Length: 446
View 1 (tube, rainbow, N blue to C red):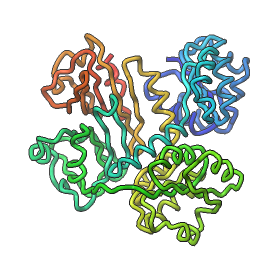
View 2: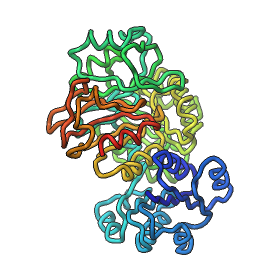
View 3: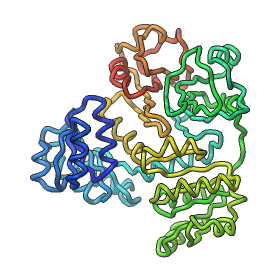
View 4: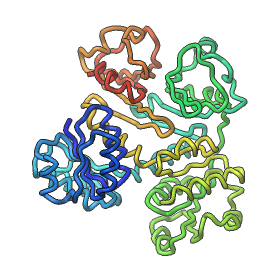
């Protein structure tokens, strides 16, 4: 595909890198010349320095032949205008990033569709939804569900007391045949790999599992996790992610938001009905003690400053908080943050990539999730009639190295993938793939 990305920083850069791996022709339009020079020196991307709302700039990017235009600048008004102009100038499909709730309303969406916008994404809104899911699923540090929850993906960090430590996977599979789950990836010391029968699990491993909902309780026991209830939640940062998260949790839990900006505190007080808003600096340890951090069950740091989010989460861990979640903008910090004890990392660039990359994979990819902890994607394919995946059982499909089938949904019934399972047309198949395997996996389900 010929794709134009209009960006003004790291989101556009990360998206370009993710799409370039799939052999798309990428052109980046960005106002920062120095950033573009740096990108040109490390890739084969075409770059144009300029304003994406300029008709001349879009024409220079050959917008009339673009299969897709993606506008992900920080200013949603620029994104919307870029998208509308691009469609009028001939682009086949247009995706834009927005930041405000008003632009996500059904009324606004209908108007934008009439103006030529094909898709709208709000990374902040999706981030808040992911946080809400993780607060309700206490054992996992990353979670995602497929086909309305018929299959689920969880990432768990194995504790020293996990029953599966120092045991090969084949032994675990033989011993717990009754359990409906499949381990699809292991992340160990900054290295991610697809597991095989002889691999041995170690304490500290981050394991990715596809499971049926019924297996979750025993899966927690095997991984050394204990279920606990979250009642008291402290949120650091009252920006959009913090506000939406509080709104979704305040009816069921006791929520407290710490926000430095006094004007934003007034806005939060008006927007939230059952949340306590405190105007203070979360880096003040004495203030955290006064606000009861020792009795908090979950600590969510979602300020605009990555370092503040990481440091306050570590402080919360030191006080014994069971679950910590940090918004980390710098992708390079993700692995470090997890290794030093933060339970869950949320990254808006990966969230944006998950949503947008799906549009480039064809109509049979119903879901794509770029995993936060590792450089891998997990996809849900709707199997077309006559594709290669339906020709023989799973153990004879010649899956590429770096890919694994986790589960299948057929109608209302879900199955964990086994070697002799035969995939059929209209099945929904969940596949985890490392970057080097994605193209071959696409071919299998095309």
